[in-house]
Length: 258
Image 1 (cartoon, rainbow, N blue to C red):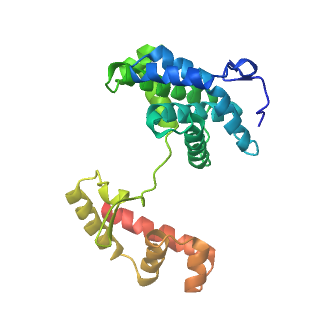
Image 2: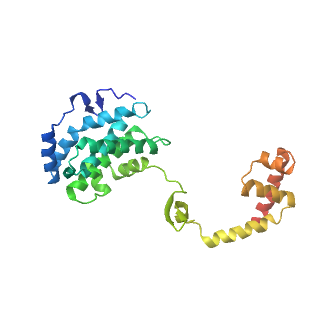
Image 3: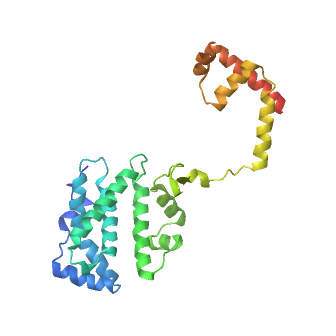
């Protein structure tokens, strides 16, 4: 990962400003009063902090531009949540936020690769959403975000969806008294329940038309998910015989069902 390159995400890292303590305090006072220009100046004045953090991840295979943009999201979150009354340096508070955001990205992005252009669009949309929320004190619509960055609604939705991490069907969503409700428990079968019940009855009747060995093969193959080779080993015949008997059994069932 080329962390040492001068330009990252269009930003010349060699010319990044460095804010003094008094400047930071003054800008934060303006930020508290809703001054968006001050907020942008504070973000720009702390990009060196993001740059220093992403150098810690030089051993990863991620693109430096990606890490820099994710680090900027962590920086923005730190600015929005920083409490000046705690008498803690901003950098002390911000660094763990930036690191956490990058680690979350590396974890969630480990299995799925998203194109450079989609990521750029998604990051622009995230920045625009944050800016509009602060400006209007209201969560913006997709249309408003699209207008802000000059792209179509479809492009915004597609890009934001692309960077979302997939959720397992076995992800727990609620636990009480030792009983856990999983994502899959909340997903209903779109197929008409009565239709499904009738189909199952028909399938049972169709299997009654098979002889004992054909029934066993169909059960092992299509209800237990075994390969023809595994079925052959289990019932003591060749894989070729399993294949032939399976085809015959399916023909019998098809004739009955039609």
